Image (cartoon, rainbow, N blue to C red; front, side):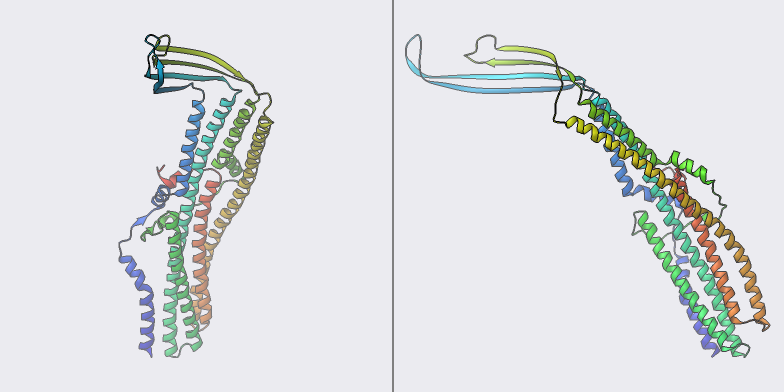
Length: 450
């Protein structure tokens, strides 16, 4: 009976611990948070889209600047014709015959036009283009922060489950030892069968806890690889020293002020308002007259038997034009009203975004503060449950306690250690989220990657 029971426990322990032993012997690289963030930034579709939006805004700004310059065009035309006059009567001889003639024409010209005044349309377009470019740049930087935040969150979640796996492993090892002790005491008549059954149930429960933690590690790794845009990435280990450190949070009012001042998405919306102001200027310009200068020079060659005058000639022309569209079926007025409405929409978007930011900061501040308190409580609880387990074990040895008391103490200790891990990881995650929410730079997690 004894040998069979011992063999069963040995087989169970080997089946559970062997995969971990094999993994430990494998050469698995270790990637810290900065390396994972660089992978994510390098292959981020979100950042790629933002980069193209910045390039598009740059080209739009170049177009707006170019509208202040004169245009210049070159042209060339050439034609050849053959003419046949049938029964042509020679005025000198009076004879009739078919008369054939051939002529050619070519012309080269250069034209230029410069708009002097167009009702501030170009200045409005330039203002809109500049601010749209600044908005696109702010969006790109904010999207970079979101990528860093998402990567850090996934990294810390993986760290969470790896630590919970360690806690579950320790709990299963402790439960296995207690099961073996209970079976030994039962065989010598010093423990009841119910103690063995309770210890066995506890051991089975710890095996299930370890399985859940292992599955959590697999899922968290898959999520991190997905966040890095490398879903088929080979397994790697992570830096677990991030759990060590002291944590504190600034006053809530200071966080509000930082967020409203530094948030890049809010800055983007402010640039959008200024861009809409430029659109209003452009829309208003169509109500005013426009003035433009023009000049052209052409040189032509006409070789024909029927041409009178020089075969080669040049022509230079220049002038100005003034245009004032007095009635355009309310197109200009409607365009200006629409531009003003778009500006008001941009202002409302900024106002709503500021409200959302304050709510987000408040929620993250509360979550961060709560996680800090949970960490303090879990550390005190660990000390208390360790003493509780020691006393329960002593009472059980002298027959003054029960196996259920020991098991309860073990459960409480494992739970307290798991709570400590959860609190630490929640602090790390909320710290990253809160720094992003108040507009603090996350470049320290991204290294020098741009």
